[in-house]
Image (tube, rainbow, N blue to C red; front, side, top):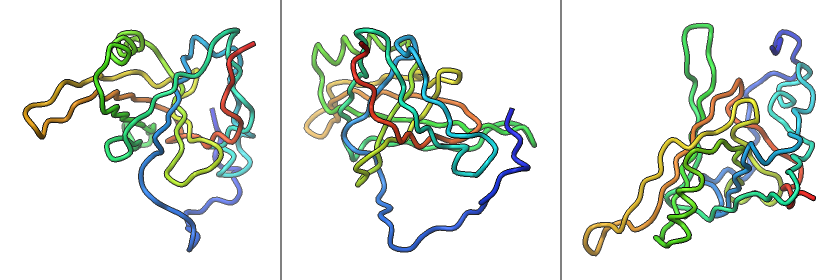
Length: 185
């Protein structure tokens, strides 16, 4: 359990001029918890506020396993978090929505395959060139909450698949500064 009394650098300022566009890029990665051989760890607990939410060591996947690439549509995908729980006993609840604007046998088969799996989700914010934001951990994984979709109705109907995932943790999400895990060797 983290002891927050010794944290240095605690503050909620912002820096003028930094890119702060909304949304996530059109590539997300799902790391199935069952495929993770070694989980990357939080930098150092209890030293600074940013250390509580930074993972700098790579996740290592089991032999022959790879991240699952998802190509969501920018305008209909994203991640959000909120505080949940009772007074003085809070936890963060993070939600990820990934909309894929198509229906195909491959997408439908993929939906069937992941519906009962647990994940670490890696996404990049719009304009982010390196690193990822991580939602879920091996101990508190993101779980598929819903998969919805269809052919739409008439000429303006939305065709596609939306995957909704949810995770709980003591921080809303982590900054994952390590490399994307390669196929496990």
